Picture (cartoon, rainbow, N blue to C red):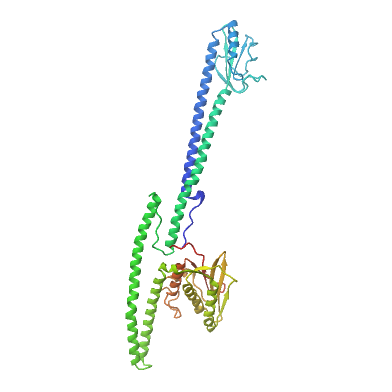
Length: 463
């Protein structure tokens, strides 16, 4: 059983939460900037209109030549292209000022109005875009037009926009960098937890999930899982100890029982019914003893301390030895046993004797269940830099619904089959494979029988 790989990039929960927080932060920052811009623009607009109104009231105090002199004097202090005026007679003929025509959209009601096109003139010193304007009827019957361009307002708001955009960029860049850095730490911790979980799944119940000094949510979850593992390991050891003790303790009385039955058989008359029954009793005793030996063998293989004796080896000599060893047995059963390997295979790490035992069990089963005239293939494959060993046969195969159960203890595909054992052979194979960290898959061969594939791609083995 393999665990899922941890999520990468934006698909991890921490990345999504940080991205959501950053998006909300940027959204609220934009809303804040919009409100700030609206408030500042409104304030500056009111200030501009109030200033224009003050100028209107100031010039209303003058008339005649004093008004012309006051307007001329004010031009020395006005900003070019921002403030301008025009003085007209009752027929709206220009008398003084740079504005030579009353704006057509300006009502003559003495109130301030916002104009889209301010002054239709080629003079660069006159405001041409949007502006605030007012037309005032003086006491001597003339018309005074005062305008103030909104360009100054736009200049201030442009400065505000630039400042806010800089602030936003300086917020987003550290936010993205922080999002990238903050999401990496939880992923590293998840990968550490996954590595420990893979070791536990592989059968090492002594392994525990790593804990940090932060005592955060991941540490709380890891501590809960570790407590569960402590309890599970204790229960498993108790059950395993009881089973091992029963198997070990019963071997001696069974051995004595067999010896007594054998002595009694020696004293009985040959070919008698009594002797035949004693032979059956001895055979059943041998079966029981074989089962207990198998249980003790599985218990021995489940001790992961045997990994300390693993060596790096070439699998080719092992496969050739298996083929030579079982070739006479296959020929006796009128089967063809073929060995298919490349010139070289990637080396593997393991216990040679245990791997020979596991592959011999698979090969002997294929030979045992293949009918005369059939074929058994032992194949070695270089699978992207790792070794894959396959056993194909032309037997009845293993039903898809039972391919996981065949590795359980005492399980047999056909309980009525007298040719089968007592269901511990493949359990021993599974224990050896788990000890090495390999993977065994069961399928259907090209010949219609069973296809057993041993993936020798090793992961990091726990100490």
